[in-house]
Image 1 (tube, one colour):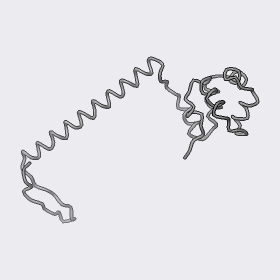
Image 2 (cartoon, one colour; image 1 turned 120 degrees about the vertical axis):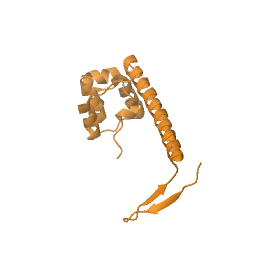
Image 3 (cartoon, helix red, strand yellow; image 1 turned 180 degrees about the horizontal axis):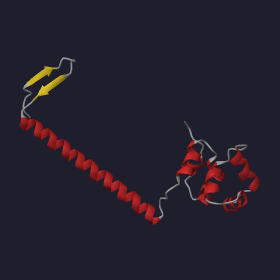
Image 4 (cartoon, one colour; image 1 turned 45 degrees about the vertical axis):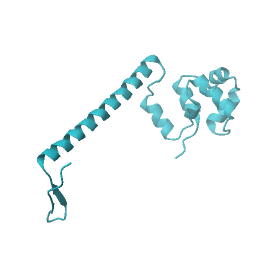
Length: 135
């Protein structure tokens, strides 16, 4: 690396560094290489996500559903409605009573871990997706 030739200060106090052109070009080349590596990594991640979506491992969730979840609506209710299930059909799929599912949806009961796991399986989501938001 070449030494800095000169540091100058602008009238507003900003410090500028004068350096040999070859050093500047070397730094720009390193910057471009880093950007290219970062772009390649981003592209690999995007391709993996698209493959998971196409294979059914991941799903795209519509914005209105995400907005409801972010607004703090009960996630069991939001996912149930998104999956077009009645409380009774969800309860049956999860092996729970309709009353218990309704109590979870209204917040009257939190739901035991085992029940939430059964609901998550029935709704085809991770159990974490059914937990209330923690801001």
